[in-house]
Structure formats: structure tokens, C-alpha cells
Image 1 (cartoon, rainbow, N blue to C red):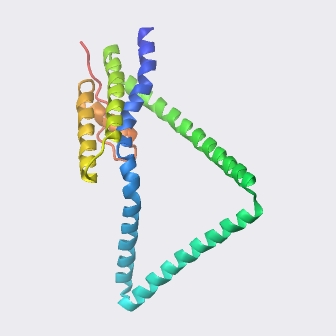
Image 2: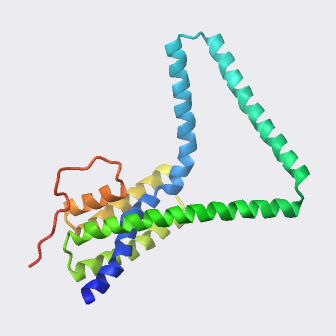
Length: 214
């Protein structure tokens, strides 16, 4: 009975341990994503111009046309917003906005719960194959709590540069992996990483690396 109780308590904890490091880069990634997207767009555009062997005058004209198109879209969007303001009064706009937000939240909540439930089932099967002891399961729960505390400290901390924040995040990841190594084998840790990043190619068969206990 105690083993079942410990197992039920462990699964949310281990799921959090698996997913938590990914959120360390979330805020920074959001800020960098727009810059990177713009850089990639410009690189692709220049590569396209090069392949088409366009002269500078033609390139400049195309860039100007693109900018004019974007401006026209912004103006069209603004006109649409002004038209909506003419049709709806403030109370109706608020009600419509609230209704849209509620429907959006319900949709995301439903799909998030479905994804989490499916992930939970797959993680349960993975961890059960490791045959961890109750002590090891409890240790993983402790690691979850410690990791969350460190993550919160990192979020609240101010850094001199983006690079400094990136280095601090990487240091926390390394510490987290070392802590996991106290409980899990290297193969189990790799399996856990593959679990939260399923698009990455998996290694050889049998990567669950079952630990044997005396």
C-alpha cells in the first residue's frame, strides 16, 4: 500500500522535474524569438535575391513594396478596429472580449489537460520500468521542490547581461542534472530528457537503464 501511495505522489513530482528546466529559457526565448525570426526572414530574402540575380535597384524596390504592404495591412487593421468601435458600445466590446477570452481559455485548458494526461500515462509506464525504491521516489519529489525554489530565485534575480542570465540558467541545469544523478542512472536521465523532448532522435534500444537494488 505504501508503495502505491508513494508512486501516486511521485508521478506529478517527476513530471514537474522533467518539464521544469524547459521553462527556465521560456522568458528569454520569447524575447529572442522575434529578433531571430526577423533575422531569418532577412537572410532568406537576401538569399532569394541572390539566387534570382536581382540588382540593387530592384531589391530596394521590392523591399519598399513589402514595407508598403505591411503598412497598408496595419492601416486596414486600424480601420477595422475603428469600424468595430462604431458598431459596438463599450459594454458590448467588453462583453465580446470577455467571451472570446473565455472560449480561448477553455480551448487551451482542455487541450493542455489532454496533453498532460497523456504525458502522465507515458511517464508512469517509463518510471515503473525503472523499479525505483520508495526512498528514490521520495528523493525525486524533494528534487522537484528544490528545483522550483531555485527557478524562482533565478527569475527574480537581476543580471548585467543576457549572457549572464544564460550562464546562470545553464549552471542551474547542470546542478539539476547532478542531483538527478544521485537517484537515476545516466541512461535513465537521458530517457527522461528524451521524454520531454520527443522530437529529438532516440538512442539505442533499452535506454531505460533499469537500476538494480540490493
